[in-house]
Length: 572
Image (cartoon, rainbow, N blue to C red; front, side, top):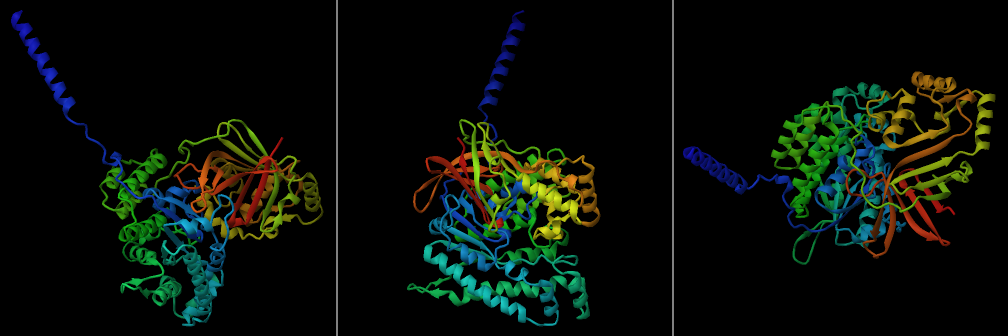
């Protein structure tokens, strides 16, 4: 018995010693959870066109800030950042924007004045808005007349942009990026009529990239020429350039030359805008430049790894074995390595968009109804069509919002009467929209949906984004006929008044948070409502500025891309 007790005692002592030793061994910490290194807080402003706005490209649009290069750069470097890029902007549009005064939280002038870094993507639309098919034909003949004319005007606008920015802020680091060449054998940038003519000049589809390169280099030459002509020598004998150039063109061309299958993944079906991986590649180029300038955060690579691992697990956990992908991301030594590891892991996998992050932030303490009293798009007063007695913007105490615009009953009656008397209502002809140009974006807006299935598109947009048309009965045979006609012809044709119900309204629902935003130049504090910003920490696309008007709370929102202005006042 004594020997037994001694044996048990020794065993307990050994267990105790082992436990102590185990407890004393420090647990292995995850390098990505290590405390951040000290960094400077910088204000960064993004200006430009649709490439910078990152709406046409990131898939789905709900991932805009996680996939768009502005969000990657802003989030990983810990910047305070704002995106004032506008889809469709030419150099002339941007020249006007940089002169604009502030409009509540939709600041422009104050952000330019206070920014430490200003990044610009511009010039592509100057050429795309002309007949680029005809330009390609002329280029195939060695004729640069059209391009030279556009270049001259664009160069003047560029000078206005840079001069205006420098007048407002002479100290900011100004970064402009070169335009890339997205053209391949099947590129929609070369229309069929141009292909026929170009072929007569001895250029087949395999030569389209090189042909487009002639134009892209002319566009980028505007930047290089300006840089050369306006670089000066200061009193210390140092060269002082008007801006820094980030060479996105060369980064894309390297992929084109070395990995054609990867290059094909960089661009949207429209043949213009960068997809998720294209934006990531741009962010790598910008990050390298920021690193070179000493403006990058020492925590940027760690944050980028965490961002992509979180996103991969959130979107692809049910469709891919992510262990190898996460390991490759962790082992990456730079932004380019993280990008390649992430997209190699998820390539060909179907994402799931249900697992969005939970919205955090302040809400109203009680439900609020704002009555819509002004709405204007492209200079057209929408209040002519909207019944403002039933139109409102609502915010509840749980964090949900609803925008509801009710179409006037008398307008619907006139519409039904018109449809019944004539040959119907062709929406394609009524609206200044080319639906063929919109189709390539259906894959971004409604992933996995047949672009010819209008009913499924409407249902998916409602499910993913909370946007719907109230009053449409999808089981209605007359409306089903509209869907069939669209599938067969691409036209939205109402030839039966019964396709439209007794009422029709636009509804947009989602989540919001309340913020206080300080104007970095004036110190003025704005009360702001941010809507549907579930990924990232930057500003969402939709935002209301709250003020007081005639003793009542008042909200105002502007959206530059559709020239929308809308205002609403708190109801009694």
